[in-house]
Amino acid sequence: MRLNEKKQFFFQNLSMGGIWPGSTEPKRFEMAALLQTIVEQLKELEKGRQFECRSSSGYVTRFFKVFLICACMDKPAQALTQNLSEPTAKFGCGRCEIRGKSSFQA
Image 1 (cartoon, rainbow, N blue to C red):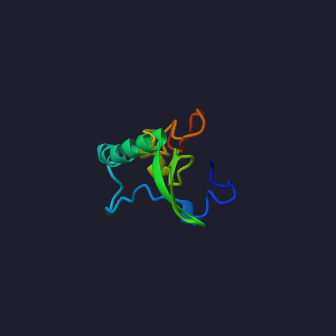
Image 2 (image 1 turned 120 degrees about the vertical axis):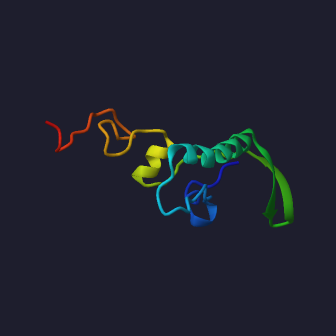
């Protein structure tokens, strides 16, 4: 069974993975510690488990596998989450391998 594609991005069907509460962005080792638990939980959900679901006849138990299909974050968070260079670095793009330019280069 799959969640209806039109409904998969509805707010009530989304999960918050984490929010960094600090006044500055986390260091790489701090982000790794934060993500470790989330990654372990996602791996368990991919294996599948029993969930209690509401139906027209009450509650039923169903086996589901859950997969992370997207994430929404700003560029600095993407760099930390995916272990990429900072967005202002020469290879700071998470989607391509084009070398960036800086107006400060000689």
